[in-house]
Image (cartoon, rainbow, N blue to C red; front, top):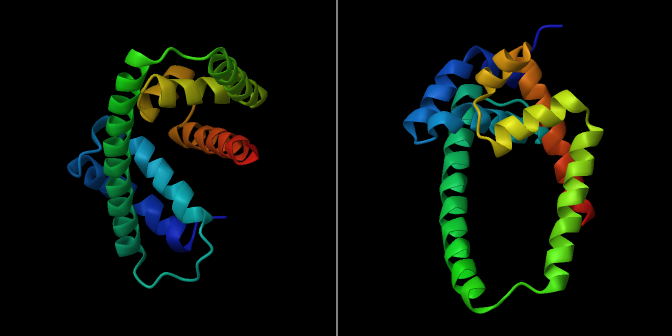
Length: 162
């Protein structure tokens, strides 16, 4: 069954949306951001969209604004953490809690299967572009995107449990 509605517009204009994200400063992360955009847009319960391409461009622009804000907040957090950690050693409880959280994330990723875990690690931890991951694994770009969606949803569910 061929895609219709917003999905058809997304697929037809995918390259243009990637170029838009690159022009807005996404750089090599444009493919990943486009994937994030589709996950967010496709999960919203909306009716028909009057101007779907404009809707997607606006959503991409909003995503870039959110990304900028997150980076700004991360820099501020990192600065505060650096100042704090220079004066205050990590408590044993915090170290244990962090290790337990890492183990939970690793278990969720391992439970998704070797390929999905590898795709997530290469894309999100190593920063490898999705097209390169697809070539490395001998799968299609849409398979890499689907694997990332599954991994992101699983980690979001884990986060919601906490």
